[in-house]
Length: 242
Image (cartoon, rainbow, N blue to C red; front, side, top):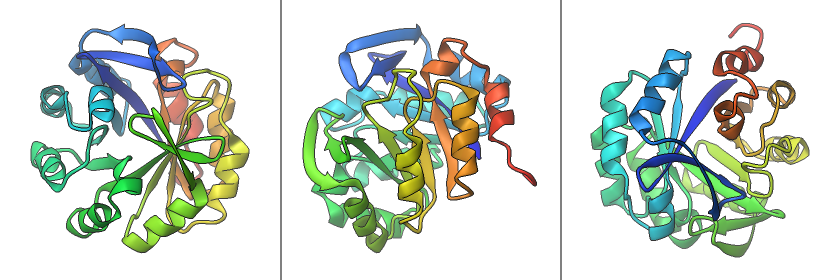
């Protein structure tokens, strides 16, 4: 199971939000590139970058930071936040990102999702949910869409990978919603990247125990606050034969 350290960018700085709230921000680094280099030096195999400004405003606001990160490290980059057009997708892939995470468009523009999956292999469905319902617009707007219902629809559109965040636990350090991931993994056909709430190495080994369908986990606050190191997280995520 791959560990994806997170770099969430807001106003050009590396931050973490608590439960997705823009009024609950902790700044961890003034330079996203410096942070990416630190993760690479610690053994990162992937880096997950979120343009938080873009997620709220609906278009990329930190593309230059993303480009600088790509130029500075040799680690594949997964990027989300404000990706709501084919033009933006092409711009990101031209810049050198390996995967793009679609969020709001999964609900508002299914035709774009289908087209994106046809043109690019690295499209990830980024579903953020609160109490089992999908949230969009940078988590600021709830919907009536159930998570499983939406994922099954997205599979038909050609989506090959899911990143799932439990908003209630994201950034809280209260542990992952293990039951939700196990239930979801048993009902869908695409691999899942877990996100939100990892507070201990036990959370990682619990997710790993679900099986290979949970192929990765995005970790933020626990790494930034030194609860455990990235090296320890990577070791906890290893399965036999990896």
